Image (cartoon, rainbow over all chains, first blue to last red; front, top):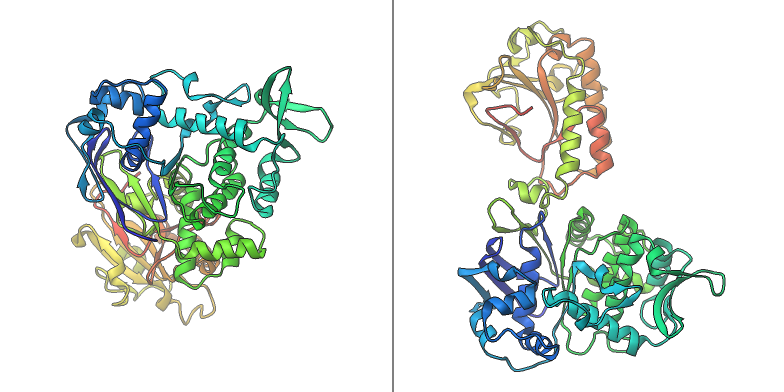
Amino acid sequence: MNETVTLEIKNVGQIKDASLTFGDLTVFVGPQATGKSIALQLLKLAIDAGQVQDEMGRYGLDWSGRLPDFLDAYFGEGMHAIWTDKSSIDWQGRAMDLEQIARRKRKAKDENLFFIPAQRVLTLRDGWPRPFTDYTPGDPFAVREFSEKLRVLVEKELGSASLFPQVRRLKREFRNLLERDVFSKYALKIDKVRSQKRLVLGTEIEGENLPYMVWSAGQREFVPLLLGFYWLMPPTKVSRRSQIEWVVLEELEMGLHPRAISVVLLLVFELVVRGYRVCLSTHSSQVLDALWALKHLSENGGTAKALLDVFDAPKTPPMLKLAQDMMSKVRKAYYFDKGTGVVHDISALEPSAEEDGEAGWGGLSEFSGRASAAVASAVANVNRQPSK
Amino acid sequence: MKFQQATESTPGLEEAYRIGLQALRAEDKPHINAANTRSLRGSVDIDAAFQTIEPHANRWDFAIAYKHTNRDDECVYWVEMHTAADSEVKVVIKKAMWLRNWLKNTGKLLADFECDIVWVSSGATSFTLSAPQQKQMAQVGLQHRGSVLRIPDKRGG
């Protein structure tokens, strides 16, 4: 990892106190409405304020220099309430003045952070990515921006009729895993009904296509994510897209079976190994299981093969290299505590930690743990004849 | 019946009762954290007591009795101090099965106490149980409690 990157957030929305240090891969966990998405969107703003202002201006959003209007335009309608007199943000140890960001136009610059929002399924309508202007002004910037990126990617960059499998974007191993665990025998294609283009899943029978509305929920969730990965993995010799250094991926598990989540996690590893700093939010214990395995395999001389076993992935030379490279990457995990509003560093992922938040991995393993404890207690006492 | 009396009336444990945590080895005591040490009602080294009687059995380690403030009777914590490792799950399950079988037959008097059967990690723990392992253990009444068994003043449930 190149440098230590820190973000401190105090009294913003549900977050009372968060001191975040980012790794090559950083994971946020915690119950609903604890501020994970706010923290990720603030990270985007800290890195890309100029680009955000530029994009919002380009599409006719006007906040008249007022912070509440800027916050509503950026986070979404009504979200200005997250910022109060007590709110503060420090980026890399320096105070970030949101009033000033809202007031004064920053110098435009290239985008450094690519944001894949949790609402990504909404970015396709009738099987085609919606343009930025197709949304209402109250919709979050992150969703509109991602949607616009997909539109540009599909309309101008991908070009070919077949989007998956596509040889130049993903390693053969990833294509095979996605075929096995997401697409089955279907191919993702661009189809045309009269003059209207749309994405369809093509069957083995020529001309027989499945339109967007009959895809499985998981396929509808996954296609925008796949296109996001395509955006980040250009089909050239360079491993990253232009100036993009950071990737935010919200709730990677949405709609996916655990086997498909494993493939997405490997794709995330691919991004990290390509040199992106990746930040995830998740409600899947599988993500922290993977982080835990990585930590202990790398600390205990575990092999790349062992790591690939975790993911049921093929042990080919490119995948072994990916796993080996991933072992040395810096990983961080944070738990957003609903009760206190404090964000805890749980990177040690110690299941016997004194802090419940760490031991229960931010609540992700609580239910399973409680189920086992309840059954164990009942079984242990089954033959008891309590004294009267 | 009290834990002490039940222990002293159980074949094989007649001389095994100790006050407080005195039945535990010195190295095992830091792994037990009782909210109130005055509420400890004694302990027994099961493993040592049955070493000669059942030398080849998967014997259990200890029993610790505690009087919770929200219970009329004493509760018993059946504690196995054991290395935390995936490979040991089956071994500790066998021990728990031995314990439950023993409670059903020889240790009937002690089986009447409300109890937990707990595995406490004896070394540094870098260990988490998979969901299937947790369920296998739960089915024999066994719980893993990390490297320290915390006995609260009020018992849950």
